[in-house]
Image (tube, rainbow, N blue to C red; front, side, top):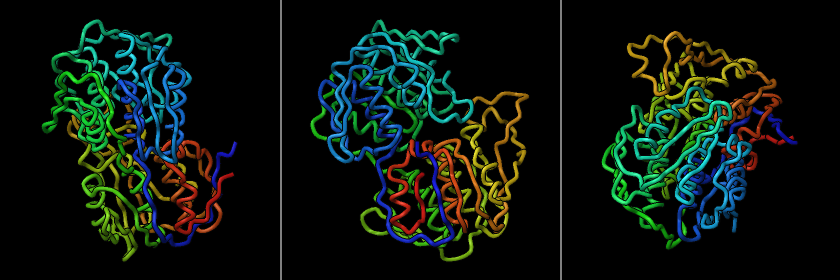
Amino acid sequence: MKDSFIINGGSPLKGEVILSGAKNVALKTIIAALMFDSEVYLENIPRIKDVADLIELVKSLGGVAEFVGKNKLRVDGRNLNVKEVDLFYGSKIRASFMFFAPLLFRFGECVVPNPGGCRLGARPIDRIINGMMAFGVAVEYNSETGYYKAKLESPPKGRYRFEKPSHTGTELLILIGLMTDSEVVIENAAAEPEIDDLIFFLAEAGAAIKKQGSTIVVNKSLPLTQKFPFKIISDRNELVTYATLAIATKGDVVIGEISESVISSFLEALKKTGAGIERLEKNRFRFFYQAPIKPIDVETGPHPGFMTDWQPSFAILLLTGQGDSTIHERVFENRFSYVEELRKIGAQIDFLQEEVKDPRDFYHFNWEKNKDYLQAIKIHGGQPLHNGVMNIMDLRAGAALACAALLTPGETIVNGVSNLERGYEDFVDKVMKIGGDIRKI
């Protein structure tokens, strides 16, 4: 199996990148489509590993999910005939946890394993389960098998307030709320634009969903029927990867199409570094090197804050800066797997113990007392990097390591690229089109 990149870096990258569809919308809309009383057509779906795995999972349950064009997918969940998600498929992607909704809708009960995907610390599954139970879903967990068993005996109703916003939790409760015959209310809901796109998708099919600030109200919505294909939004994480790469290599790259509102906090941080940014027509942006990168301090947070998925790529840009920068990760623990790998090629990055007055409130994961957390790093910019061998541990870290290799003179090997391919469509082709020397082996 080919699972490595050979990269010869050190050259400025120039050209244009056309963004793919957002992974975190593609997965959720595919699952939501299984609750429709019609065929569903989704456009701009990226051909990535996570989508391929999800398609196989849908098929294993008796549903239909197949590409009928380059990025057009047909989904039909009307003939689902299996109510248990197999551990093999469920362990691959975190989005499998959302199968509670279509399976409860079709069968009234289901069995779903603990979710897979990147292992990014203590993700708050308990908040999601508490939300399901608040809406009337009976849930039992078997610690020996790792499976959750859920049952819905009457239409969901009630109100649930997230202790801290949960992206996946908000989306799952929206889907469960579609089955109400009255209303459900979700308070302190996550505000990511990917959630808005899911709501637009459902609303076009007849769902009665209202969003006011951080509160989402779902009224009786079924049946759902698609009237015309739905095109998902572009991937903002992909934009950040190629934008920081372009500037770090002292290049000049145009990227689009994407709404400025979904990347505003990234653009604000980028402006502070002195990087070149120009907004073009048709929701395209030009990113270019114009002066030495200034050091800055970055703190991640839920939307509209600086997204946690952006910090690995931003770290690569800050390595080229003139001075010391810091990144403080608030959303997940264990999000710095790339640090040790970057040290292998000469990066000077230290972990910091930041003083936080109230860590339980400050961090969005389940913070535990007496546990050692490494939630901040100091990046010593301007130090020369050299070629070497690095290993990818998770999706966004993988993109960062590949980008580090592209700005480093000489030949570098990056292993474990299947992790990167979970979320990046045509990564090699896109890099080559802007002048990168990269091949998969």
